[in-house]
Image (tube, rainbow, N blue to C red):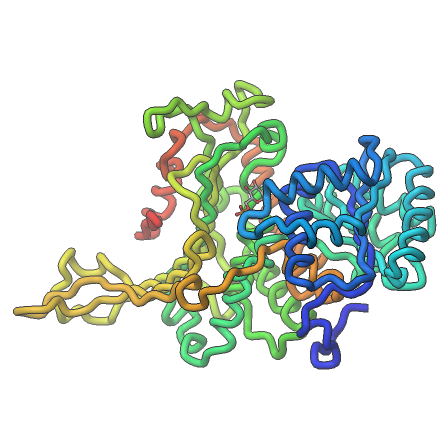
Length: 507
Ligand code: BG6
């Protein structure tokens, strides 16, 4: 059972990994190498792993335990961005790494996993606690869970939980179907759907900022907020994931999950407490208040884009259709902008503009809350009235921090105003390293704290507003490419805001 009262749970505050085994399906894949292993190694480095800890890597490729350890050592060296490699820490950590090879559809694999778990429980004293982590092709999630169930591994003498990577389905019906297949083996409270944006320190800080302070909440509503812009921009292209992107597109890859979760965190009602379900109920309620648009509304309020070739910094950058594995006529979106509206008393009439894209000018994720102008302009504003609105900017990455933009008197004669900024910067204020999202989330899952994980109802609520857009886009033939690599997306996205008298920020 998830822990409902954090005050009864010392683990949640000490934040140490208890005795357990983490069994990773897809251990040969990219995510394991780039994110999961470096995160686990960092926890070892910080002395946060209990002695009774083990990892069992599972994938199709045949490997011995030692070969797996070697491969993981390479990954940790290559992808641990801010953690030095310490040979002693690695040695102790690596002694808890094991490997099982097999096919997800083959019952023998689960017998072997069962045997390995029993062996590890004896040798390492993991207490029979197991976190299964699905990081395979999404089409294999249900089969893996069923395989575990059929082999009786969904239950044991300790706790059993299941972490599932995104995407959770490709539309509402498939998301429901996936949940019901998982529920045949794991109850909802033991299913941890990971959205790594929720594990980012700065996204968690939104809760601290909003609900740990008294001064912002009174302004946090339709009376004072003019509109909100949430940007998740990336400068990289599809990086060898052309075939995946062609299937999925930016709307489903980034907006359906990450950006809608960020929006829910910024717009949700205050949670009565910091208990997992209390926070998740509010996020869920907000997602369910987003208006699901009709096809006509979608044509007005959602814009897809696809990047074309360009020269950036003297180098030729291919367009999406020239990327490996992509159909030269592809209609997939690598950019998506949507104007959502929230149908509740707090936000009625306030547009929430969400946009994301590959090959935009820079990597930046931020939330910009634009406030209404002063009712009367009695001063001269350098660039004309309304040219520099009050803005609260939450920078999720990079240069994590919060800025408030307002007008100030220019020194000297007259009353001329100029925009200035009050800045909080994570790095300089705290001078400490922030844990990676995967460190936070893995630790939460083994502790049994699902606050930062998405629940079935949230996933379904997100699909309910995204799927109608997907459907309209699928039926429309777009004149792609409609933005050059290295620019801020298609002109149609600017026009969408201009119709409401707004402009996109250029972060
Ligand atoms: C992933 C998407 O979920 O998030 C990728 O599939 C995207 O396409 C990535 O690049 C962005 O994550 P981050 O943490 O680098 O902003």
